[in-house]
Amino acid sequence: MSEIRLEVLIGRKVHDANGEKVGRIEEVRGEKRDKDFLIESYLVGASALIERLAAWKLARPIRGVLPGSVYSIYRIPWDEMDLSDPHRPRLRKEKAELRRISR
Image (cartoon, rainbow, N blue to C red; front, side):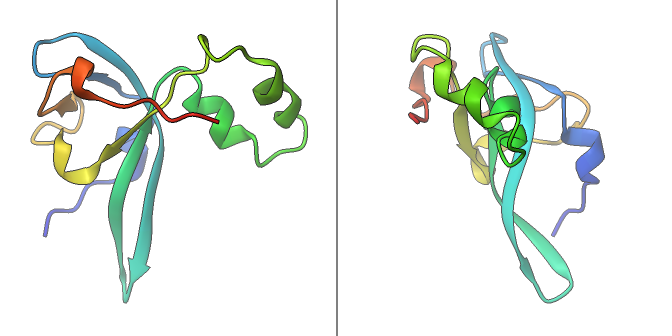
C-alpha cells in the first residue's frame, strides 16, 4: 500500500492521458480503516472547490446559482489516477471518457 500526504495532492492540476487539463484536485473522498485512510475517489474541477466549501453556510447560495454549464465536477475513482509523481497527477484515461457530477 502506498502512502501520499493529502496536502501534496489538494490543489494540484490534473491532466488526462493526452495531456489535456482536467482541473485541480479539490477534495479527496475515502474511508478510515483501522489506522489507514483509503481513498475511494477524487473530486476534480472548477466547481469542486465550491462543493468542498458548501459545508459552510456562506458557500451554499453560490452553489445554487451556478448554471449547469459552469458547474463542472468530475469524480475520479482512485484507480483511474496515476500518482507515481504526486506533484503531477495524471488520469489513466482521456477527459472525454469522464462523467460530470450533476447537482
